[in-house]
Image 1 (tube, helix red, strand yellow):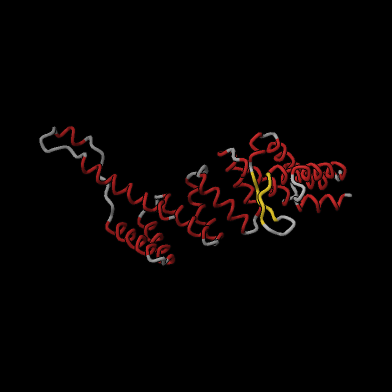
Image 2 (spheres, rainbow, N blue to C red):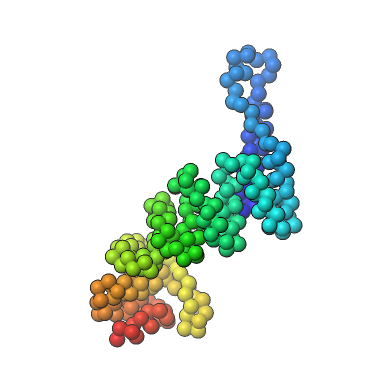
Length: 245
């Protein structure tokens, strides 16, 4: 969060200084002077609240830093970086409802704001609102083409019982060569976090979706076995295979 606000203030201050330096000398023609852009300035209140923000961070008083962010936003309501800083503050502190609410003005101004979409998607998911989370992840994927986002979409679609969509998403994932290079973390047989190839999790999810959507236990069994051929200790596939035998 800290670098975003520092960048905001530094840019605003630099713009002001640059415009001041660009002002024409008195000996230049009046016509030239009138074509110069208007000088930008940092208001005394903005400078004060920024110093308050930085000081609060230095002393690890994050509640005061948050208050200073609100003050900065009131003084600079059109500055998206400040609003995003506040949304990220709430996200980091697991106040997901506030994170989602703060991200909405950013998305109203720019529906393609990738950072706001991500915070909104995760926030809705953590709040237990999977349909809204999925909407945001779908928008995010269209902008980024990121396989991790597509992976997240497949699980949300399954949880929402949108099995045909889930299977279509999985097919897209399976068609991507990059899938073989990606890792996910699940607990192993000793209940300890362990990295597994993402493909293992995708095969397991496809087995579940095939079973739920088509009732095809044979096809599901084959998919669970494929997952275990790659990672024999993948607990979820072992459990699901045991259920269909």
